[in-house]
Image 1 (cartoon, helix red, strand yellow):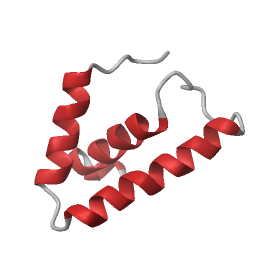
Image 2 (cartoon, helix red, strand yellow; image 1 turned 60 degrees about the horizontal axis):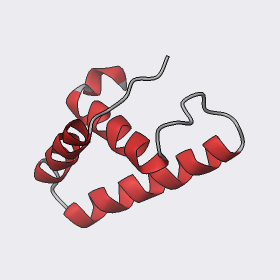
Image 3 (spheres, helix red, strand yellow; image 1 turned 180 degrees about the vertical axis):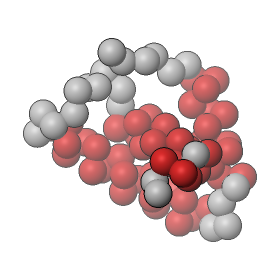
Length: 73
């Protein structure tokens, strides 16, 4: 049950992440760190959605966390 994300949706999410960030470098580093984690999770077979690239998955997850912080509580 994977959802395909368009390039437009991913770029919109990335723009929102960067525009709402107080520090663009730290946001970029968070995306890179999360993508690295997802890459190793995918490599170990822990993730189901292997057709989404780790960087794309990191952008989606971080933008979802930013848009709906009540999910983290």
